[in-house]
Length: 84
Image (cartoon, rainbow, N blue to C red; front, side, top):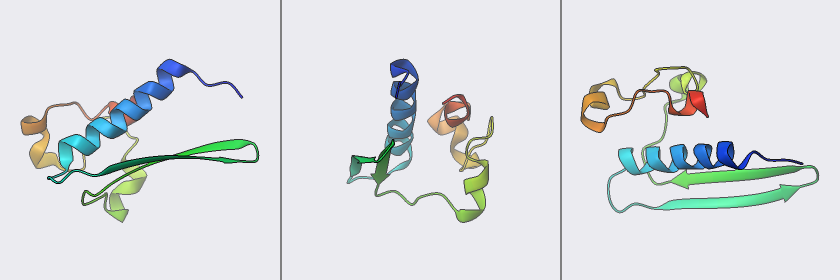
């Protein structure tokens, strides 16, 4: 199995960056890696409020933002997960 290090680093950076932007202290971020047969599963969890079920199907769409009201305050374009 081959992994593009630059791309996987971009994914982890985006996920952790999003967690840090949208979480209130105390911040807890947990990363795990599990190897199962022919796959590697990475999980990143935080103690934030999470994503509503209704928004889950859209989080990889370009320019999609969970919290529209915070876009100017927090910066970003809504492209992070779409690019990853």
